[in-house]
Length: 101
Image (cartoon, rainbow, N blue to C red):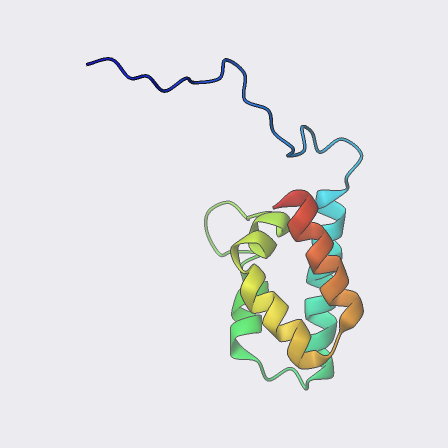
């Protein structure tokens, strides 16, 4: 039985085509900096965030880049910035999420 459904020959999309001109790595590094500053401002007693930041320099295996870490934990980072009341960090995180993740 043949399908009568037509499949378009070309699918259009409104997603970005390139990262050209977007400093994803630099912005992810800035997000990591905001995390470090907020952890320090909160007294530094955040076990998860110490674990998270230690992932940047693992004892074995390759080190993940900052964009990968941000992307992998974006919800936890958002919640942390909200708890800290850091609007600037939240805005940057949203930018990174929309442009790079």
